[in-house]
Image 1 (cartoon, rainbow, N blue to C red):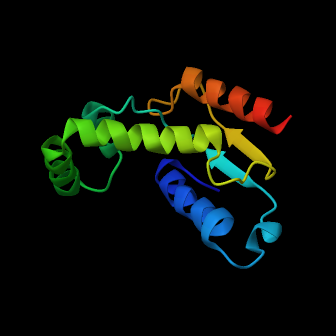
Image 2: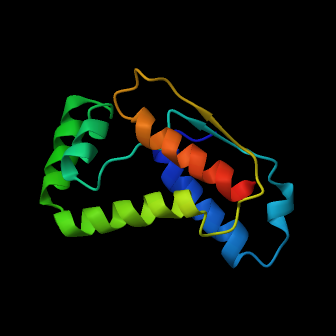
Length: 127
């Protein structure tokens, strides 16, 4: 089960299981569950800042917001596109693994429109 931070972890798990692994570990994966994820941040730093609002205590949030503001916006956008397109187009080949998305239209981080587009695209790829 993956939340928004877990989606970044899922990206590396997919890479390891379906691209780098010399074992048949992918046969052991029976499905993935996304809980209010993945969020679509438009590749903008203010999107990262909105996610940071839910992190730890005020001091941690302030440090992370400061760090986010220091990032190169072009690199943030490129990384966002790489991440989102990787999920959308399943670049590591986990396409036959069932996926369940739990979400609400009241979630301040997960934009329902983008998430439903992602789900529709994934359905089309699997069919």
